[in-house]
Amino acid sequence: MAEALLQIQHVQKSFGGVRALKGVSLEVREGEIVGLIGPNGSGKSTLINVAAGYYRADAGRLRFRGVDVTDLAPHRRAKMGLARTYQHPRPFGSMTAGDNVAVGALFGPEAQVAPEGAQESARQWLHLLGLGHAGPKDVHRLTLQERRLLELARALASHPRIILADEVLAGLTVEETERVMDAVRRIQAMGVALLVVEHNVKAVSALADRIVVLHEGTVLAEGIPEQVLREESVRTAYLGDHAGHA
Image (cartoon, rainbow, N blue to C red; front, top):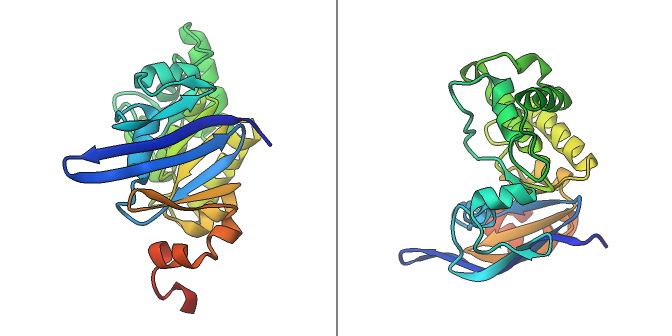
């Protein structure tokens, strides 16, 4: 079994009187894809933000590559090889697509400081994800699919060991979804692990090695997709009371 790369241990997070995470524990191993699913308000994006360092956990610990990173700032985690994408793409609006990815090359465990090296790295990642044509484009001219791929390319440019991917398929057509899923598979083939938050159950089941289901801030179920999605508790909480009759 592959070594645990990211360990989230009994993490709790509250906002005022709302307990968003109630002691969540999960692991992502080297080179695997873990799908994180659950109904709206179950704590998925909160968990991603805690793992990335944007929210501080109220309790619990996080370990990355064997190091306790619970109190590390986001940029320190990025330097260790932890990258993320956003549910709503956040490109630098005054830059081209290529320049956006070049910025990513300046962070991470194998950061390239020279501008020429960063630009060459950007071209390689854009080409890998099928965005070679988009490099010179201003980001406001990109489609939603291209912006989601751009987020992945910028994350890859930092040479991560893991990418926390928040809703990379949201709002895409069936054909666009297949293209982004193919890009995710290519990323995994490079040895990069991914923790993928997704509402598209069919898509994440096809992508993930394992699935973790959150419900009301706790882990409801986890395991291989086929088994997890057959569990009655999951079908009731996530897919709805009538899922068994669909």
